[in-house]
Every structure is written in C-alpha cells, then in structure tokens.
Amino acid sequence: MKSPMHKDLAAGRWWELSLYEQLGNVGSEVGRALRWRTRNPQISQGAFERALELMDLTLDDPRHRRSVARLRELARTREVLVDFFAGSNEYQSTDVSLQRYFDAFAVAAALSRDRALLKNPSG
Image 1 (cartoon, rainbow, N blue to C red):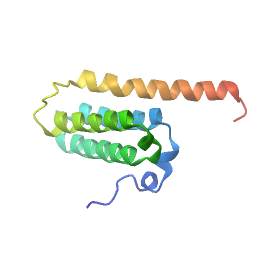
Image 2 (image 1 turned 120 degrees about the horizontal axis):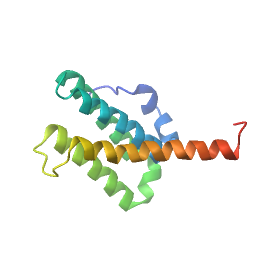
Image 3 (image 1 turned 60 degrees about the horizontal axis):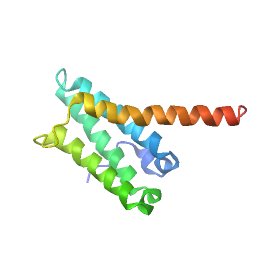
Image 4 (image 1 turned 45 degrees about the horizontal axis):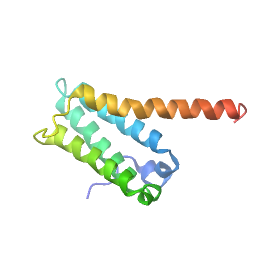
C-alpha cells in the first residue's frame, strides 16, 4: 500500500473538518484532475489519486458511520469518481456535473464558516 499523500490529514486532522469541508477539499482535487485531464494526464492522475485518498479518509471518519444513508452516498460518490476517471463512465458523469456536485460542498463550508464568524466575531 502506498503511503498517504496527505500525511497530516491521515493522522486524524481530517476528522476534525465538517463533511462540507471534507467534500469541498475532495472537490479541489477533482477540479484539479479535471483541469489537467487533457493538458497533462500525469498531473490529472495525481490529483485523482489524492481525491480518492481524501474520499477514503472521509469514508473512514467515525462520525459518518452513524448514518447508513450518508455512508452509501459517500461510497457512491467515490464509485462515480472511479467510474469517470478510470472506468467506462457508466454513470455518464461530465466535468460540469462533478464540479457542480463538489462546488456545492465548498459553498456550504464557506457559508458555515461565515455564520460561525458572525456568531463569534473574535473567534
């Protein structure tokens, strides 16, 4: 097994992030993989592998084990990514559909941070 690319996150810091933040970060790697797909497949592949690692860390998060529906959604998301980047794209995903899916989590994470700052401006 390869050593984790996100060593600091694998040590447990990842589990301190909200689900929105986790999937927003996965989306950053997915976006990178999409942008480099035609220009530099090696860079795209590396970003795809990092996205999978982050998805695996998210799936391993004990907080998500409380909800079968959440685990199912996370596992399906991972499956769709593998299907799109390394499979036959049976789900008929597109660059746009993947980007939209993950962008929603990045926006939700930002809104959540903004609300937290409004509640506690000194924090």
